Length: 127
Image (cartoon, rainbow, N blue to C red; front, side, top):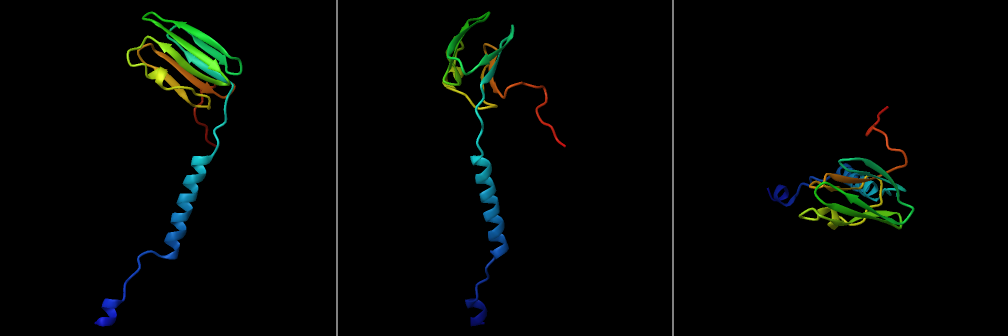
């Protein structure tokens, strides 16, 4: 009986450690894959869509039915500087520059999305 009580069973085997190392390394790889910057953004308002070149520094005033917004483009990035919306979440979002990043102002019905060159209607394509 002493031999059985002193003997501890290990539930972790070498294959389990290999699987854990693979999962952790794959997660880190996905996390550190670079997201490339873009030079184009699409600003969607209730009235129109604007395609903006991010390589030129300038301000874009947007006049809306219920107020206004001021959008600034600088150093390849874009942000909302002023807005008449109550919570100002779009202003607090800050600068965006990577493909897929967005700023949305729900009260003003305005969205800004950084896109890669030519925007298409296909979100995902599989072979």
